[in-house]
Length: 306
Image (cartoon, rainbow, N blue to C red; front, side, top):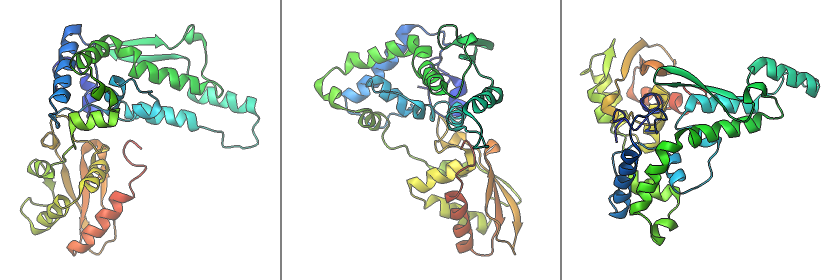
């Protein structure tokens, strides 16, 4: 279960840090079936903690649970944000008539019921409904567009890959006990609690303006290593844009810690998520560093992919 085994989309593994089925995979159906059998054996033999980074939607699909826009968040986060913005859009002028608002909507987004995607270096397109290229997305039908787009991304576009995988799982796990599990319970059995080992990240960090063995940097890492799971997720999201470790673990992530001035300052730490870059001022006390770092991390909604 790696991003380069041919079964999974390497672009999704890189951008979203999860393993998702590659719609352009050249692998045979039996390869996906065998992967499903392996996953089924993990569940059947009650061996939790398989080192695999599947998003929650995989387990929802195995269990046949309904899917929606929120399920895109872990797999295609940028598309999720775009579609959410599409649904939430409204004209700034409240006095605008429905006809004027719809015209502005169409001119703003310029969408039809056709989506484009990359397949082995080729740009392809897919109509989401009959005559989709001739049907504009409007304020009235935007909900239908989002629904059809989600269904295509999460279901029909990978049906050839996912269906044998699902059958492989069910070939091993076809019992009343398995049927009684919901997707959340199944995910916990397979993946266990995802461990964010910040010691691995520390081993591969680089510094600009600081030195690895300075007392200030040591105090910084002591603070991070003492974080609980939720705090670690928040920090990781703050500096990388995702609260998940890369496929392969945090040893695959190179955090850059750059000095960003010193006292006197009340400047908060900031981050450039595209470069995994933390801009950390040199505060006069460890207590001040802890306070301002926690303030930055807990008020970072709106940064990164959000």
